[in-house]
Amino acid sequence: MENVLVYDDRLASAEYTPTHPFKPVRAKLFIELLHRYHNVHDDRFVIKAPLPLNEELLYLFHDKAYIDLLKKAEKGEFAPEMLHAGLGTEENPIFRGMFQLALTIAGGTHAGAMLLAEGAARTVFEPLGGLHHAGRSRASGFCYINDIAIAMADLVRKGRRLVYIDIDVHHGDGVQEAFYLTDKVLFISLHESGETLFPGSGRETEIGAGEGWGYTVNIPLRAGTDDEVYVSAFDAVVPPLVERFRPDVVFAQLGADTHKDDKLAHLNLTSNGYKRVVSGINEISPKIMAMGGGGYNVYKTAALWTLAWSALVGRDPEDKFTGLVGGMMYGPEADAGSLEDLPFVLDGREKELCVEEARRVVKYIKKTVFPIHKL
Ligand SMILES: [Zn+2]
Image 1 (cartoon, rainbow, N blue to C red):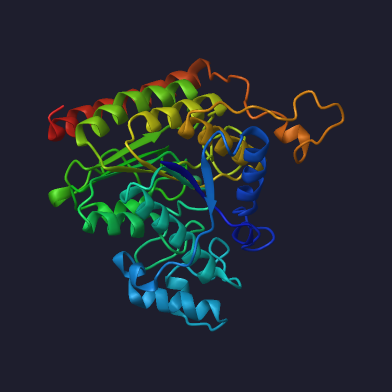
Image 2: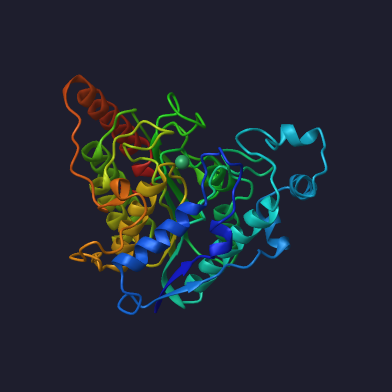
């Protein structure tokens, strides 16, 4: 079975606004790193360019009125409702090609999910996918169309059991909204606490409702949290729940904005913790649809995604340029000279507070959610 990368240079060269923190070009840097560190032949991977999603599928999640607004905005027309729908703000600017960009990213996630469902691939990674904040009828957090919710909704209606694991530093609120009431999807999000970070939701007490009671799991972490605290919370909660649920496909949003050098958030992960968690996700996934999500340190994000890919396909990265004196170097070398970070461990009172908070949250989930799954 193939490993598939969903990618197109034309999408990666899109730009929201020149000063906007969301830079699609990260995906291009990632592909460059991948070619430096991975042998295309050995990894048996193919790169497939995404096509725009069939518009009918948008309505598996989104409201028609909102999609009509998106189309209008792209044509340069203005309607006052746009602001209520989160459009035309600094966060979610209106720019040329925005609808088409979002539609094509969603098409890529959907096509990847179908390859997995048909058994034509074991691993799919779409670096530009994972737009987890887009709501049913609003744009939010740089996300216009929720590629994840749409692709998952299509597989759910085809009878598949899905797990969603979101390790982006921000809460996966749009995806949570989509599946809050169902037991066909097990939703798990680890994120910096909403007390200190956008979008503010994702408390541990949000555990689903109705038939979905116990099928939404939130692990909010204290600002400052390091690899050690993050990994121990992940290990305590995620593998037991996923193994019990027995998914057909796992969707994983692999946002790189948990990194300590990310400028939009306040966690302290390094490549060591990130890699360990992606490996952990991979081990419990029969098939995996991975998406890039956030990451606002452009070079670090490309490096972390390269390590994620290595973990997903089970091959260590090998630097083909090692030993080339005066040979090619990648990008601004100072930022990306090595894929891996030195270990970082928080200490003192701050560390204690992070440990205590993570313990409290894990205890709460074990008490309220685990019994629903007979754990
Ligand atoms: Zn994020």
